[in-house]
Image (cartoon, rainbow, N blue to C red; front, side, top):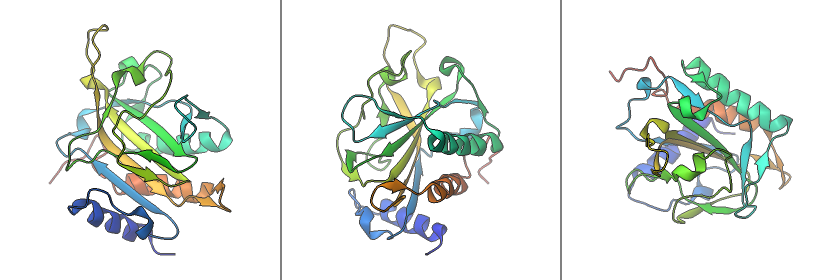
Length: 215
């Protein structure tokens, strides 16, 4: 199996080109990790983050479905460890958080779009961050699909939300990561690969650190 950082370079090259709809199947037969971010954001200005205790399951229709078992908690714990290691503090109240993290898993081939920073920023609808995390949806126009067994992480800037509770404001997606090729036997997620993919996503995102300085 090729080293992960080679996958990252391959994907970066793909997305930095002019191709708007890359063929993800050409990246690697095992798994690949891709990250992208809004380079106008200073991530060291944030200190707190909100992360739900479940993972959204994509591909099951418009009604929200959640993955909450022991394996889901292992993935969430890995994300928490990575964020904590970089100086961010997890809070239970999203109203007090600077940034929000959403984790999703594509249970089957699912048509969604990632924030294409060369083609306009991605946004979460403010309603998604409502009191009870009600019916889930992807707030983007369809661009291309994620294959079965894809893990997705998205970070939004919660400081961009309106102080007026009656005013809805879209929230900018400032960081995005996905890892593909995490399923074996056509159905079961490989937890070892998934946890390594989470680690790799943060490793190739050094700007996600409250001590980061762009020298």
